[in-house]
Length: 446
Image 1 (cartoon, rainbow, N blue to C red):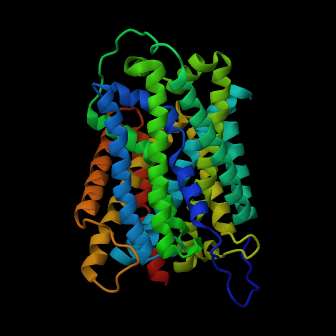
Image 2 (cartoon, rainbow, N blue to C red):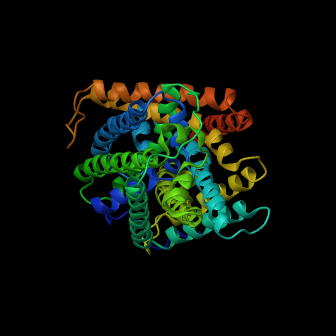
């Protein structure tokens, strides 16, 4: 493994990241593949264009509430580890351990596997590798981006910037091309509304997911107590503006009815703009989008495992920080191995991506809610004021926690009753619960 045990002074995270670096990493986590798949489902769940646009604006507002909560939490405790540190300080080491265990085995590794499957699906449209093409690409992507992050923080953050700039430019060009396309929207047969505004918000908030990953950069962000607020707020505003622009482009070409009838809304828009070659171009854009998300998720995911290794002796190998490259190499390697196991498990299901979403969603929203509640705990305890405090307390954090509770209910209800992936949901919950006896065993040893 990669720890340098010969150093007399243990290596530790370095403040190598600027506000720009943190913003690009956060944006990369948010702008994944959802914006290329979700808008048609949102269109099918609303009754009008204003309601469609309102859903996306509300999604940005809800995410901003969460970002403000996390900004105060990060200002109070800017160390590397994010929610792990918040939960351990708010509800005790058992809560922190259970989250770290769940993130290591379910939340982050499952999310990385899900995005890897989407990368594989679209890469296969460019060059097909046989019956298991998507799974092969998914495995290769996990190995390549894990190796890149093991090589060092500077390399991974610079690649993130490059890929993110390319992705944003492609999305803006596609949207402008759609808005400038002459003529009325494509004529299609009317499609009835098939959902509710609540379902629309579930889909929208899924697409906005990932902004909380910025909290894991606290130990490596320059002047973290002040910079974290800028990273979170600037990132959410930028993503909201980009999503609104992209959806306006979709509407300009297809209209609301056309979006309801489309299962691949972005591909249909590109076909109208650029003909048959548009589908190939879209596949390349989605591959870039998935790659940026993979790189950012792998980068931030290992930071929780590092924090867990710092606090629990039986996982101490994960708490080694490699001086060369300034990276938690051991944690990255184990994270990659678990992710590869999930990719292999997902490859034998009808839809690997959907299986991974069902596996992770209820566990994710459980801890998201718990993290939001820690702010009330910290405020009640008093103490020194942080550099940033959430405005309109307790309204803003209350709204955030209510959203998390609703999403927790909805994710379980959708996964169990709205799909055939109840086994994946149950597996995620069982793996999370297995952390309880593991913690009791670890505590007895310590």
